[in-house]
Image: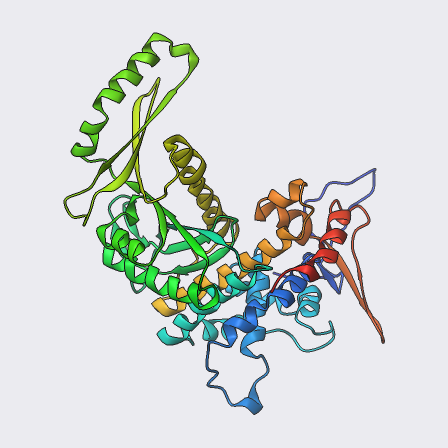
Amino acid sequence: MNDPILPLPGLSPAGGKAVVVKFDGGLLSSDGGVLALREVERRLRVADRLAACMIDPRAPDQITHSLADIIRFRLLMIAAGYEDGNDASRLRGDPAFKIAMDLTPSERELCSQSTISRLENLPDVRALLRMGRAMVDLYCASFREVPKRITLDIDDTFDAVHGGQQLRLFNAHYDEYGFQPIMVFDGAGRFVTAVLRPAKRPSGKEARAFLRRLLRAIRANWPRTEILLRADSHYCSPEVLDWCRANGLDYILGVAPTPTLRRRVEVLEAGTKARFEAAPRDGKIRRFKEFLDGAQSWSRVERIIARVEVGAEGPDTRFVVTNLSKRNPRALYEDVYCRRGQAENHIKSLKTHLASDRTSCTEATANQLRLFLHAGAYWLMWGLRASMPKRSMWRVAQFDTLRLRLVKIAARVVEMKTMIRVHLPTSCLGQEVLRFALARIPRLVT
């Protein structure tokens, strides 16, 4: 029984007095910080960009919630931690979310879960392609001026599914069915694009086709910007190498070890192992070697950098291929290639903190839209974090920390004739940084 008049049971007395707790507070919200996310969305216009890619089949005179409003509500929900569309049934009357949607607390309720579900099943493949282009345009618009050079980190991640979704595939490594979407971020953590696909390693032709569409969208905004492609061995194929070289892209890619490459570093591995065994207390020893070599399927030899590391667990050898002209192999590996590991943290933010793996729709097009919606929520949280003081812990805080400290704030809403008052807790820990961020949000580049 869910009766707001009944008090919560099982609460202990305090100071000899009974504690009576009821859900009868009226216009209260537990998400007062969603008003800050509203300002970020107004600057970035994520909802408007995505809505412009779809055709609304509804009769114009019978529309209550526009496509942009539905998308905006969904983005705010995901950013605030409500990744389940069913939560809209409760949140549609939340006063903070109403204000974030440019409504007063006394006006109509926001869209319901069924309306959100109809939106998710609305776009076709062409609309989703336009959305992918819109996400790239949003990325390019986030720069104050055209950059001379950008780094694109490309990676794929496993997304387990438990139903009969289209495109699902059994992956023997993870021992379950799922998707393996490709995600692209830049070196600063900005989201670029993502595509839903079956749970298998992308082939060279598939990766080349994806990169061709991505480059075309970026070049439409920045025709002269230099691009460095950074990825693991999944994307080191002859098709990708030849395509990058033909289109003037720099690249540094991981290479899967082969017997031929192993023979190239046998002497270095033996010498490194001997050094470690002579002084094991000094810790791991890392050495580098570079040479020209190529697989039989490659059209030409490439510059290969080998990193040999020996520790208590034994030797560990990695290979990367690059066309960069920088001479120092150690600097290329440690300062350039290894930084692609930061992309794993960005994927973690998208999957763990924003639940982008909620791809439970039957239709593949609906799950692709969900991926874009969660990416839009990523942009809201990224914009909020980018508005923080540069040398503060907030500038590098995880999204769940930002949500807990700055979004999940209790709020009492009082609607008056000429204004809406929102009362936040006096003991709120994020007062100063929230003031600072709200003053900086209007400076976000859009």
